[in-house]
Amino acid sequence: MDDLAALATGIDPHDEIERLEAQIEALADRIESCRKLILAARLATAGGGVVLVALLFGALRFDPAVMMAAVAALLGGIVLWGSNRSTAAEAADEIAKAEQRRAALIGALELRTVAAQPRLH
Image 1 (spheres, rainbow, N blue to C red):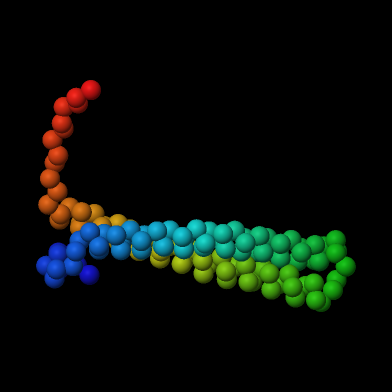
Image 2: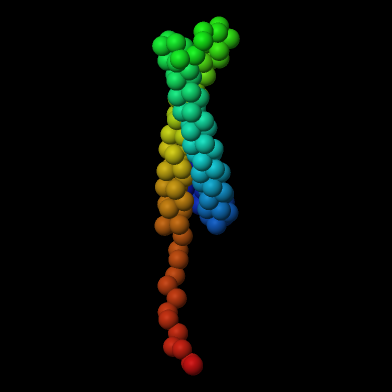
């Protein structure tokens, strides 16, 4: 929603700012979750790759089930890594937009400066 339109339609800017802050916090949580999944994906990719190399050079005895599991870990890790990286990037873009809207709403408020009162102690 356009920030000035929100002010014109009678939506309380304080409520809208509060909603935006909650949205920013939820998006930050999503990014953190993506980071954890990206780490798991990197580990799966690396583990699958190491097992495949070990099978290739004979460090491990060839077993079709182990090879299939290694290929699945490698490919699944790549997919999970890419998917969560793009999700985290989208969430970061949404955070930037929400912060811009919040800043515009705060800027549109008619805030007054409170004069400093002399201390009496």
